Image (cartoon, rainbow, N blue to C red):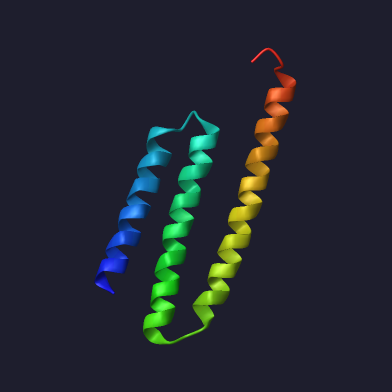
Length: 88
């Protein structure tokens, strides 16, 4: 269990470093947020298996739906930006 939490913590740290280092690049920022959300999902799933509880799976489902919406909004922003600036 400790190794799973350590791996999730490592992923979260990598994601937060990505957010800090790529503030100007929108695609990298969204990818870093996705890594952070996935590391939190991993902790929920491992805790759910360890404590034999199903509620964490519902939280993971909600987090994954929020992550999908976040990716769709980010993609829409990028497409509209490139349509506006056709010379890029």
